[in-house]
Image 1 (cartoon, rainbow, N blue to C red):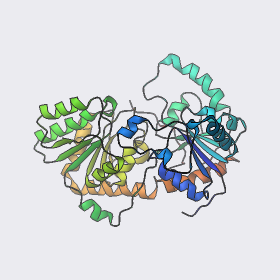
Image 2 (cartoon, rainbow, N blue to C red):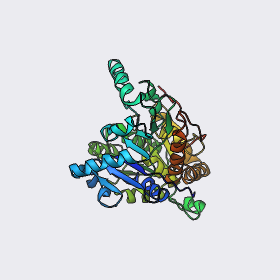
Image 3 (tube, rainbow, N blue to C red):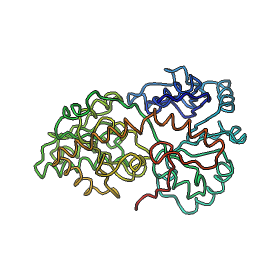
Image 4 (cartoon, rainbow, N blue to C red):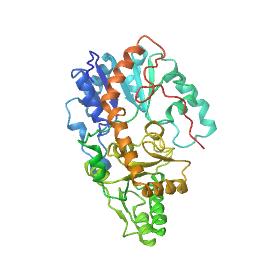
Length: 389
């Protein structure tokens, strides 16, 4: 794609990470370096302990607003002058002046209600959001997840002004995708994430227990650490799964991708608290056949059940198990799903497509209240997509 833009673009977020980096690099190219990433906080130490790099210090396009009052003032000035600004959750203070000037601005966020809210909190939020969001005509919503538009609709905000978005980690292209898939280890499963309650690593162990009891031969690798780590290790030992379930601890993002590239099936078991879930992008790009919970924010945007992945519903371990078992019984189907998943990332859900579409969308929105440019993918209209009970 060869679009070049004369716009000055600013992305305001807490800190730069590897999920945002490809988008930033693409925006630099398409704006002839007229792009700034404003980092509002340092990279947390816990992230560094998990193997994440401090990208705030690695790239010249990052302005560290947290380092000094001068940097913070410069950040606000750059934001006010920019043609297009994208800002993250809780960072309204940086864009307050700009929004009042009616300049094109996009709020970029995961869902509001990762847990069902108390009824008495709804009305105050409607009042607050009316003044912070709804009265501003050039403020739009980029939905990092399929349930974002619905959550905001419950506050009577961003109705008809919401667009599909997400995280855009690196998309690798493989020379021959069929050979790449054939080289994966047969009957290999992978789970990765923080080992905490709402990620539900125990679901993967339960799937393994049932598979072994039915005589299936497989290997399940589990990558991550967290407060349930000891319980997970115990569950593996108690169920005599240590010959087929391997808990590998934390790894760098690069090492995780290597495991994805070698694995046939990826299990994504988080519940609705997973606002987006960038491991879905990465595992699909790695041509895994993904089995994922429908309550994960990215799933309805990225997966077409039975085509480029498999979706189980309502946190059902039974349905998760049946879909994994089906894939183990049907090697050609899991290869087909993996290839289709790879093509979804390569052709549509990637930083190159998202960057170009965002620049085009912003130009259209300068003169139009509503804009429908794309039938699906990044920057298409985000329909109200209510979570299934």
